[in-house]
Image 1 (cartoon, helix red, strand yellow):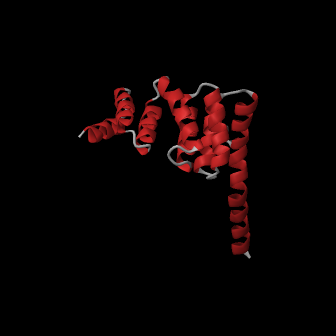
Image 2: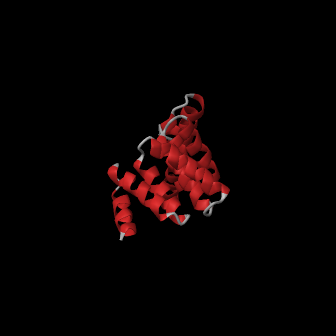
Image 3: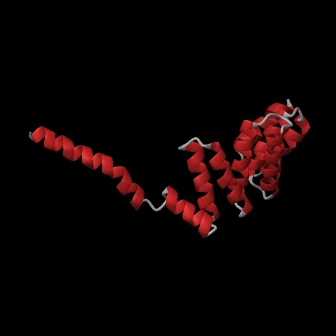
Length: 155
């Protein structure tokens, strides 16, 4: 009888732990949605996009929030929106073109990851000289992977 009671108590604690922790979590989904949609906090929109991309693996929802963060001026939002679009597109597709626009927008603001990704897009399109240009720019901005890619393409 004691075992059943203890097991029941443990089951109750474990089953309610998630709901309690979600209510107490200041960065929970509902809090982030409120901050993003009602207060226009760009980093909250980006975090929602990241949550949907990594935890829920819902790229459609992730893209919505990355784009919203980008519209608010958060270059991480632009860069990650571009990544989602580039992953589902192919060279010269509509998604690739839209990804390129996001990368250009963020790269123009000196966002190293966007410049690196822009170099990757250009390389996939068969435009090695343009790829080197953007890899060099990303390298100058501190992206180590871009330095390696540029050096490899220059050989």
